[in-house]
Image (cartoon, rainbow, N blue to C red; front, top):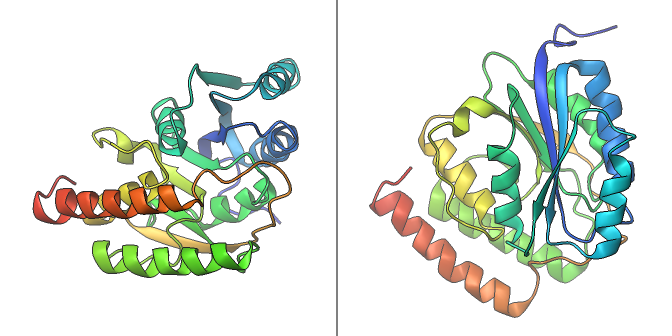
Length: 241
């Protein structure tokens, strides 16, 4: 039985890609199967953030196989936030979906996000049922959640769950500054302060089988702390949202 949301929305789906040669093809094919079923129109955008040659070859091979595929290429690595911004501002349809290219989320669960989108929601945000990562990442992730929630007062359960469906209109006059992973906190904080309405959906999270996290090393964690304080100052004190 189809829902009222069947073929209701046009959707731009994008994937930040950094050396995800072993997983990105499957991710794209799974996303396409959902979009064909639920989107009136759609495009799939791959943001190549300075990947290696093997990944570039895989992306090029997808061109003839996937309709409405667009590849945005960064000649040099800009960072996760840079890839997110390119995907958001390069999208053309009513709704924007994104998730990472490393297969820690299942694109088939986009179906749950679409079914939860309504006139009362601007963003459908996934939250991890269980985080399947090494213990140290779970601990740091939990601390990150509490610190960011305390600083920025957002109410969603999982700010770093990169599995979201959002209205493109939210970003028409919104400037995202950060090129690091902190862009997610920046985005959710600014949208929360502007009154965006959230719905939340549980999603599965899988252990990373290929690639390497760009976030979890001590230097990046230290820099993230500094950037969080600067972001707090911009949003809470200078009211830049």
